[in-house]
Length: 120
Image (cartoon, rainbow, N blue to C red; front, side, top):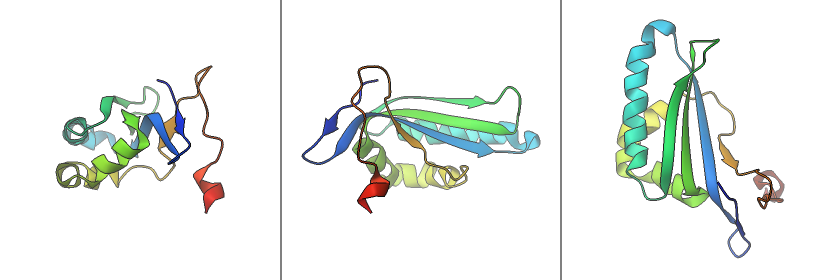
């Protein structure tokens, strides 16, 4: 994953999105099915580069959906698509409330110096 800042419009490329969920163990199988549906809807969107779902090995109530995107704009447009609104947004709204979009921080990556918080 490589991050590039487009100074003309301030967009990033190669974005990792991490959505974590707290789900009772008894609801795990049904939740996994919902996660698969959400990932399928996201995967159909332009800019989707991959995704995985997982359950924490030490805390089986903690689930994660990670997706990779060509850029932050692709991710945000995906959330606005009709199919994603229909098949994924309700589930994604149940995620633990925390920032979810990450830029590449591997050695050699250009980090986004100006945070969105400083722009407000």
